[in-house]
Length: 387
Length: 134
Image (cartoon, rainbow over all chains, first blue to last red):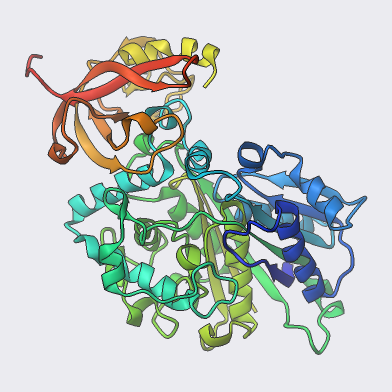
């Protein structure tokens, strides 16, 4: 198997992009990534997306995007794994390059969520859960996370504002990211006064509905020298790529408060990269909801069971903290265009490892981790990158 | 959700028809072809008692298309006496009165109306338990 590197990244702005269609947003990201890598074509485009069929009445999305980007004749296919579609796409691209089947692959993620009204988008997101036994009973995606959070607070006796630190950190970092949807810091007061969506989850616990696209260019590590000219940001190697699943429905989990798929995929990833949690310099975790940040930290070996929320302080998770999280704003502040999120996370790790994260640069960042969660813990994919 | 699907799953929705695994004796809901506990072929239909307790709950203020009429409502994870957990709405109770550990029992209620001329979907919800009868 060949080692795989990322030689270019591109990101569209994240937000309510009413003046741009899905194809334009994808073009923004893909053209930027191709320019960043210094390439004019590629062997394949793999495109992560969750909701184009239900919200845009558009499938066959990867070919549409390839056509729009002037990439005729290449392989193009969409990859779907709910909110983990982005990372699942990176895995497919990695396998294609590692196997020798392709040399240059574009991995992109795209989501357009603001062409529909809120209740339709909410219903679309609920398709990540079990349609017959969860969604039919009126539970939304936020509702499923709220069920987990309520039990967590009960079981571990956690006060509601204990989660605020995750949100405050994400917004502090997002303020310096020109692509972020929310470029403003918030304080504890804003968190406490935020309207409730599904008890106990309020708007500040929850990532926003938005549009966005991100792209990565993959190449075999052995060919990287051909692309890294003097003005190039430098390539980043994919040290580990691991995925694991769990029951689709929350009610079927052995323990709804433990992300088994995060545990399994992170353990596989640590082994592949030959590192331990102590070696990770920054972690782009899946902070779709603050409870997911706590559970992810516990399952990936950074906190003990029931204590992930204790890390939600600047000295722990800030840019200069022990384990910087959501360094460019995370899902909460940069935004969570679901099928694109996993690609944004990895593009941001690349920014950090190539010293191009601007005001949010983590000092001496050498090894970064990204974790993308599909559903409320049913598909969890962990990537570890290094220079 | 399509009419054939609603017809196919009516036993589950109207009477909590589950299974008992012939290999490991665990109760299973909904019926599966493979036991989630021991991965052997799953067993004959066995109807669950419908008694359980609230494992967790949430009152939802922002609800999916098709559920606006009932908003806000409380959804719970209900741990059934026989072991399986289900996701369902609570009914016949004020949202503020719900608590973890509350004893509940299954009732059949309207889940949603698809549209004015569309189908009306019935299924299980849970209410505070009226009796302690076994």
